[in-house]
Image (cartoon, helix red, strand yellow):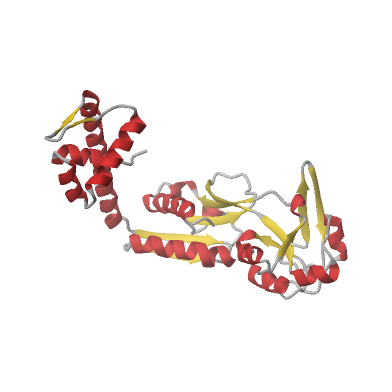
Length: 292
């Protein structure tokens, strides 16, 4: 939408495409093309071109004034953001579920935020405590799944899918289950939950599974599946690479549980803190640029 706007404004203020190219460190042909493309998108002629000089059309004059004001606002906004960066200070205490989310996404994100805001202190706790957040010391808490009704502020970071997977070698020996009830005849490696929920349309069921090995850690579950110990059920964060390369295969995909939301949760008073609300906004933007 904004391609060519800066080129157009610079051409007007410098008086020629050649001078604009020098200022923008670009080529005259590239700037001329971008301005022409801008005119095409707007459906109006902005400039009268001649071999001697350029002149604004009436529409071009109005558009230039609007663009100039817009660029000034952008410059003011950039200055305000830079000033805020230098003044943002204090401490934010965060509690989160651990595992791959904290290790490969949250911790690097917080480190990147800290690089941009060197006066900020961040304390990250990965105990995933289930306590009254209104009376807890935490400013931000990360949780997954259904949240209880409360007076807490929440923002969603992502929707995560859960898969049932095993290695090709396991499926060669035992076959692939076609229905959740068939899991009772399979070796299943469990975390903290041995009752696996499934959904197909309006039909919902829960299958109790068992197996020779259990561990409440996603990395360990993945390794057990890779070594052929059995089927596991875990979040896609742990599985993307293995599914892509074929070292693990998903089953019962037509019975997949609905995706689970990943939340940022805040006690209301703390969300009104500038440093907490700014960090929350920053993490939402970071999640767009670096999907979880």
